[in-house]
Length: 289
Ligand code: SF4
Image 1 (cartoon, rainbow, N blue to C red):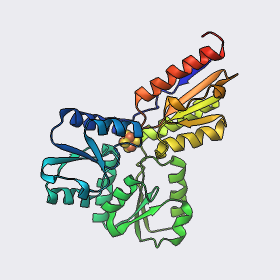
Image 2 (image 1 turned 90 degrees about the vertical axis):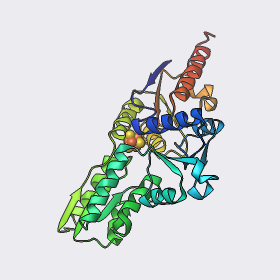
Image 3 (image 1 turned 30 degrees about the vertical axis):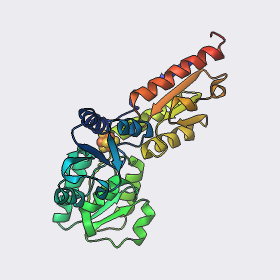
Image 4 (image 1 turned 180 degrees about the horizontal axis):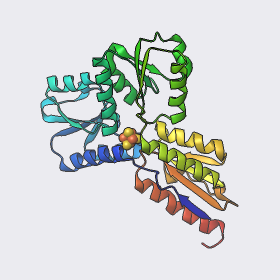
């Protein structure tokens, strides 16, 4: 059985940076370290960090000893109010916001200063979108589907940004619907991250050329779920797994080619474990144990 691993699966640059920072802080044990929300949508990594004393909190109020603690901001970023509150509480901030997300914050801040309405194409409850909206304040509106524009009162000047993990198709659909409204001024910023785009395109190739596909990553990870959707659409024999423990021998009986892709929050060691188990299953299925 041939095992084909995508080149672009696994940690993206922004996630790698955030994880590295969290592990460095945990290994140094300097004061109490917290992450605001899970550092990535991967329970195995969050547990590992917890064992090093890096605890997850959902709100700054949960930080026990503010003046002796540091809080790590994850790659999704947070709104300006969170920095202000941390400063007021005396909590040190270790900022691992992805630079690509930071760029969106500064675009939005500029648009607001120039009195543009800000349309954010994305999932309203996703932490990255919640933070971007916080920079836009009352000027910000989240557009999840092009049809949402029907119920939005558009301003004369409108700026569009997108959640970094949105698909290009979705952004194009929203922009087309917006242009059809004939606003007097529309500025579009394509803020979709290349890492997402490249990984999704590769997932299409992998699914097209394999007779079974594994998508490795947290079930709460939006970008992993999107990869799984893409692969299932092409190859119905696609399995979304979090760890090698979920692999079942019968999925691979009679299969020639297994394609593997992984979400942006999937560590390399989990991918390696899956490959090891697959190699064992391959030997067993071919009777060469
Ligand atoms: S997907 Fe892109 S924008 Fe998001 S954290 Fe990774 S590198 Fe940054």
